[in-house]
Image 1 (cartoon, rainbow, N blue to C red):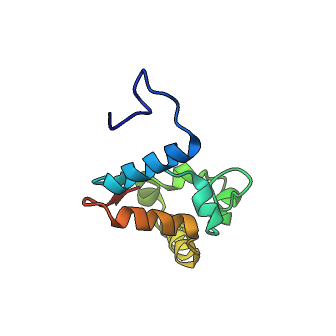
Image 2: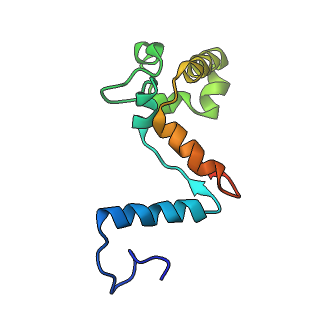
Length: 119
């Protein structure tokens, strides 16, 4: 069975065996879908849109605008100068971020797939 963790009659795997199996699956994958939370970005120096590391763009709070409100086509149409200022800030933050080992690990895993990665 290629998926022993999912078999009804499978014996539980040890932690080491589970890691080895996960590595086999990653190495054999045609593509990888990466779903990460804000922690990946926080560890790289990016702010989040809520919580302890909130700080995507200071003027949002001053203007009483929520992050999800500025990230819409309506926001761009209604106040293009504000929306572009927000995205300019985001681009600068992304460019200044320092990728950490987690990103480099994902990059190595995804480089070996036939169809690439999706995030």
